[in-house]
Image (cartoon, rainbow, N blue to C red):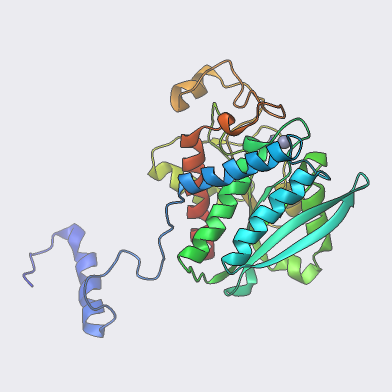
Length: 315
Ligand code: TRP
Ligand code: ZN
């Protein structure tokens, strides 16, 4: 090995390298970060395949996947079967709202420190008006694909991973609140963070990051900075999704959002493309929230950011 004479800038690195070699800590080429497992690319084709299944479920069940309707339970059964086959420990938590039975689906990935639980979740119910493919098939499908990718790669994180799909969000975050309220004080304290994904494939997308917890926010931010996409802080109805019950219980929360019924400004269209003067999702809570109501690029970027955050925060 021929060593060039280091200048001022090279000295510290050189000393480190020599120290490591002499102590035998590193043999062969040293990766940038030997212990961290890089987050995988979340395959958007797989996320879209889940969305096609959710659309088919809605179509076969009166056009929706709403709380208390057959399309909701069929959506849950679809996700549960995939998770069970992938080696997750699944739990279906039952509750009642508006005289109808609702369900949360919880999937634990065996292993990791159960005193430090990293959770990622999304609401699986739609409104009764339509199939709810952006709201919130998008978050549900991406969280499902992240979980299946954990299994496919046999990821063994330091922390314990738990994924969740909430019922009856559209009735006022009923399922997620039920889950948080049913945790013992001790189990609540074990949740290091909850990441929420509600509407991440809006057809005229913005890139909004929740600003509730600085570490989680920074993690998402780092991902988007790396792919050269500007983000804004999520302000379209703070507390309007399933992270709210977790935040109210003192659990650090974060998440992503690509916009609902607010109107994209000219400045936002300049940095993100799309159409100014139009809603981020003109089909929000409508019958046109179908598989054609998805921007694939937004779904892909947000899915990758989701995977990045899950891997980073649990490693
Ligand atoms: N499901 C949410 C709702 O119907 C969608 C939503 C609106 C949202 N504003 C939000 C989700 C802000 C996250 C953050 O209200
Ligand atoms: Zn909604």
